[in-house]
Length: 109
Image (tube, rainbow, N blue to C red; front, side, top):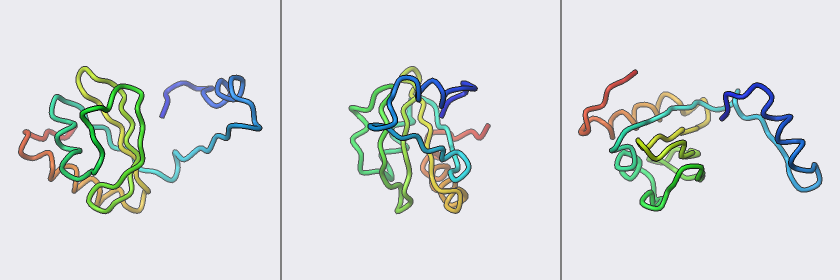
């Protein structure tokens, strides 16, 4: 996930085509961003990953309540995560995340 306009071209200049490949998945995935001091606790409720060791710029594929997701740690202060899932699971995933966040004072933006 990037807000830079020519990110693909920048990556292609730094990584040769024999050893690296770029796949644009932005049209096939739904993205939810969660942020706050309890963000890791929310993820711990449904993911088997050890989020205690997750730092900025770490990324991992996992499941959240049976839905396959990609977790991308964007920042550590406060904890900010981009969560990607297939678009067809987007609505179900949103409900699972908001349900897990209710005890921490979930506020939708």
